[in-house]
Image 1: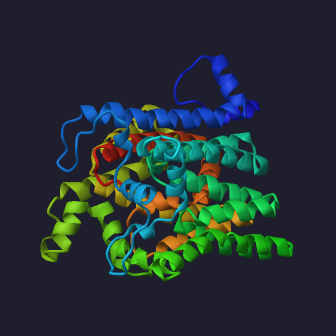
Image 2: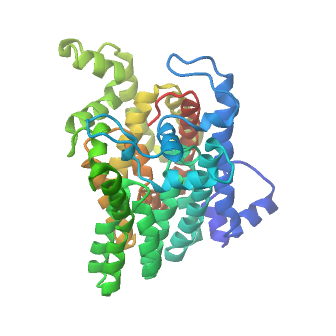
Length: 444
């Protein structure tokens, strides 16, 4: 247990006895990480955002529950209060949103809670349960130190902001993690139950079905493993039955997706646009290449700064043994400040690419270390995202694929120094995204 104290040093100095209690207790550590991340999100949205000037796009939020209700939340509100609506006309309809999350909110509203409070409670409490399931699942397969790093990643990842507002991230992470853990422990009844609830929460839950089947085949499990995997489809099948009864089409929820993602398949144009914004900048790419390729570089300072940062980062890594730590940390602080100052659109593009492409690489790199069902679900989930026909909210959707966080935590546990710097970047971007969401600016 003493090794975990050495391998995961706290970011701030607190009394030694508190450190020992926190880092030695399996129940306090996940709760502390969950609680501190909630505090950061709440402070950014309720204390910092209202004090900032009116943004060019967005609002100045008030210190009230409504700050957690924006963007997709309005659709969950409509479902919880008025039910589903759908017309197959290619426009956006709320039938594209799966039912378990708004149903959970509706149940709390029947107890007298307002929508904003009910939705916030469901997401945050479900994420609290997800953190514990994830911690003990990873601890059982690795050790306490690795489990701590995984929890640090999942609670401080920038996309963890969506576990604090009225979105499905917390509930889906809980249900999918519980299903994966139950499958690894060969508890097939629980696998079917948690998996069915996951497929009733988000479309990415469908990736669990092939993941369970492939993992069962690879590990030569009993027929019950295959049956449990197929039973996870119960959630989406019940939703399909609802669509058949109320809209006369069992696949109406799929048709509703067209209003949000017009075509299925790999969106290479969207990916090209997203990836090119990272080195060139949003202004250079959109207003240069798209409208006038001959004058693409309208802001030469941005690509010059990007090349300088990448080159300097490589040199610092290459000669890290010969440089003072002060130099490296000063450069790191500079990069951290720049990430906070850049536009949300550029930040979204960077996070989308890192979460999907970087997450896929880490899964592949650690495929022999992770459990088979973890690897299979990770790749099936990423494949589903790539074939979804769009690039909107990819970082948020990829965050919901828990094997990416598991693989990242395992990797950082092996390189703790880089892990500390990564967590610092995570925390800064998490606060930035929380402020942007409170101001009702698009943050993915």
